[in-house]
Amino acid sequence: MSDITQLIAAAAGGDADASEELFSLVYAELRKIARSHRRRWQGDETVGTTVLIHEAYLRLAESGGSYENRRHFYATASRAMRQVLMNYAEKRLALKRHGERAAVQPDDLPLADERTIEDLLALEQLLGRLELDSPRRCRIIECRVFGGMSIDDTAAALSISPATVKREWAVASAWLYREMKTDFMPGAVP
Figure 1 (tube, helix red, strand yellow):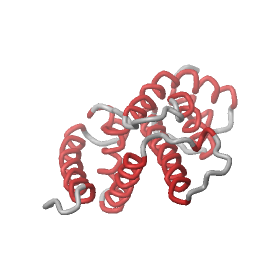
Figure 2 (tube, one colour):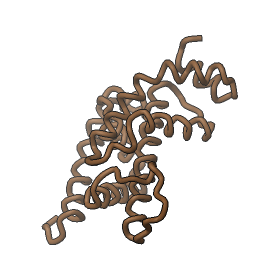
Figure 3 (cartoon, one colour):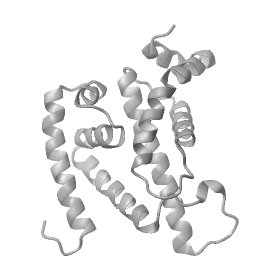
């Protein structure tokens, strides 16, 4: 049983051997996705690629989600990695804002400087707004920007045509640029 889609189904059904085999088969691709996410962070490397992969994989395993195919699995893994990083950023910012200097665990050390963390959290809020307005456009941004997926891979992961991805990508990225310019540069003309 080497087909990733079959292994995903077996692992979701509780097969521990399938889960282990799946992890070994998808690890290289998860590493590429994690590196893509990590490139967006500046500063301390506390949440390294390996930790990010393992935490995201644990979240996927615990959720017991079902995946249509391997690309859908990778898109979901990319989203889980983004959530892991956002959770770390939120923890770090909360510690800094509340002045808590008590026993700080290694997981709570800074990922980036405070301004970068605030910018990333603002970006996360923008994506939340986009998701309310257009979930598909939000998924496209996640796949392309955070997952480093190509147009074709994004289309396959979301079960839409490459032409639709291109069109929606143009609209979503223009919206995101406009909103970031307004939110990140107060006084800027939208």
